[in-house]
Length: 194
Length: 251
Image (tube, rainbow over all chains, first blue to last red; front, side, top):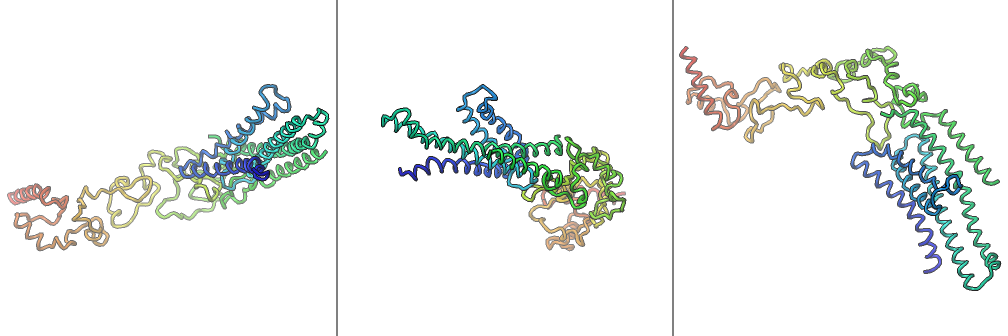
């Protein structure tokens, strides 16, 4: 397999598949709710959606050592899965109907957050894979630890790219959080919970 | 350092957006524009919504006095009745003062189903629910003006049409009598009928057949013939009719 083909199948395709599946499943669920006259369910899907997204923050807390329980790698998988599923429910909740601008800004921020999260996921996977491949190759060449350190310097920059991405992902998440909170406050303030 | 700038930029944008929520709540928070009559309270969400409790009937009634609904506007201007066949108002006769059970002030987005729920007669007090004329004006056509029966004998509470009038109680409309209403009820007068509208039943033929059986009183056909079945009710009813006729002559 050529380098370009491998790059496409390992990195580009999974990214767009995850994003495309999110969109396609949203449209499918929204259509089903309309066909079976169950649109009212969509109104309440925002609640489990937000709870799933909140649950996904377990990884963020563990990474920042605010909690000590759980394996980081396992929590990262949960973070990815729960955030994706929560986003799906929130998207179905938003539907394809334009209502209040605030709600839509929160949805937009969530989509940017999902895209950013998927970007981070594949940046991290790629960096790990490349670094491991480089180290393996160099070990086979019989290089010393100092030489190996020197040679992998450029590869470690890929990890820097991940660090830089994290610096962007956090403010995006913050924006999403604030807009969602504003939307929730508005709903609790004006909605009649009967 | 760069991250600090990014955070500051995002925070500033969020602050602007939150400020816009308070300045333009009808765009930022409202699920859709309010009805045109409420345009002047468009930005005052709490005119209708009680904090944490949603739209409140108490706030509706504060402007729309219950005794005035359907009669006068909230500014005291008398209303012209727009709905033909419906009397002024029924709101005073509702079981519960729950305005949002039927009304939604925000127009729903175009792609969604209408948010306004249809009126249900179940919302009316039982005594009023049975008295159709307390809200509806009785039709004045030839059919209805001569009726004294309760409306619900023929009409349901979901809709005026289709009416559930059972023609079979008077005369069965079988395959030989699947005619238009006008064939028997000429001039759209449903209080009368004629069987001579059909070529099968000419006055001369009907007269001859009945006299042969000794029946003189045969003008009200459905009194004996409740269907087109010659071998069913007709024989029995004819004999009874003939006997009754003889009895009358004995006296």
